[in-house]
Image (cartoon, rainbow, N blue to C red; front, side, top):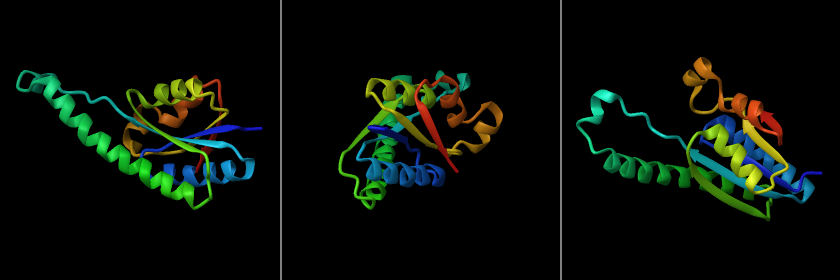
Length: 147
């Protein structure tokens, strides 16, 4: 059935619940697990752009968020290991979360994407749509949304 499952994590409780479900599926099916984290691009207000060197800010921001992403991934891996997941890979990407999740899942021949219903961006999700909704809209890969 499913040979490779991707779980996208952002550190939220919902994404950690998704890790547990994905890990249980991986264990039962003998599948492979891909744990994915996406660092969102930062919008800098125009008023501030003239005061800062955008390249410098981008480098500092990315380094900080990559460190956070590594901790989020490490926590997800720790949870997955409790389910005796044997085959596991991790990826940290930079970009739009929904499209990055779908593109990487296609690139890695994933059969199922597992997501939490609500991540860290609850307010933004209420205004413009959650990541899980966007992935649902653009993905040709089957999805499992975990509450």
